[in-house]
Amino acid sequence: MRIRTTAAVAAILAVTVVGCSSDNGDGDNKTGTVKKTAPEASSAADSSGTAKDVDLPPEPTGAERSAVLEVIHDVNGNLVHDEDKAIAAARNQCAALTGGATDPDHSAAQRFSYGGITLTDDDGSHLNFGLRKTLCPES
Image 1 (cartoon, rainbow, N blue to C red):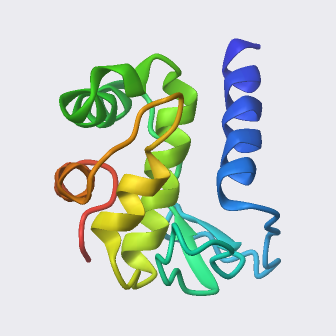
Image 2 (image 1 turned 30 degrees about the vertical axis):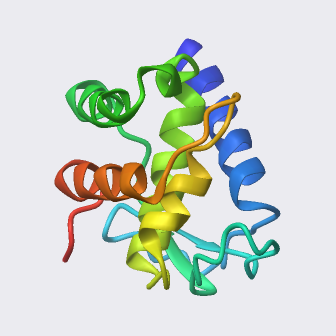
Image 3 (image 1 turned 45 degrees about the vertical axis):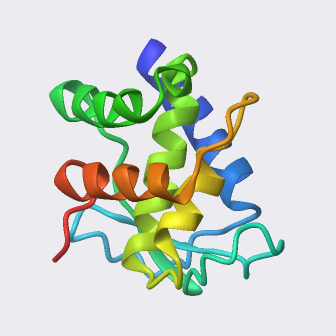
């Protein structure tokens, strides 16, 4: 039951972070990713240039989840106080990375600046490097 609750909370957070999105309904899930349609960037602060069709990686569990949280913690330990929010932000940043964000370091800095924490583009670069090594490797 806890896994379902956690999954539901993570899904809600993912929608909150990305905005209103919907399944494209193609039913093709051979790669283990969830196909979502992301809205255009709505603020000047996050000019990530995320493509309309992006792939969110599956929610990490076990050792993979721990590795992602460690990457985020290494940049700023306060970001993982809400682990579900940190994971949701990481999954959405992967979508920006695979979707061809125009400035992925800035996008990461904006996406992970929450809870009174403001990150720099250099912090965003470190996050992207770590996410590429864990949750969203380049294909």
